[in-house]
Image (cartoon, rainbow, N blue to C red; front, top):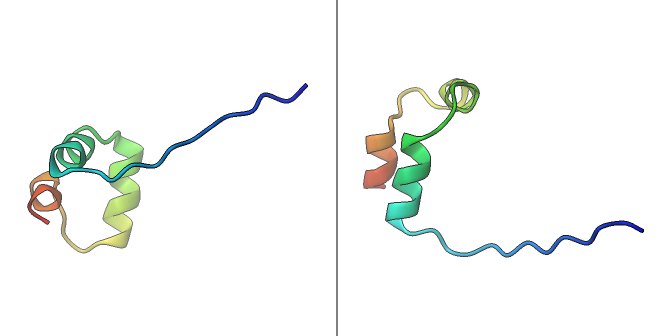
Length: 47
């Protein structure tokens, strides 16, 4: 029998976004670097 998963998407606060941006793994940072000219966790926190 397949396992049913429930996913809930909630609005992110600046605090959550700042935490995520500051704790990205190297692969995620590399992917973001390919898509944006300049970025930093600090810049994400300010937006």
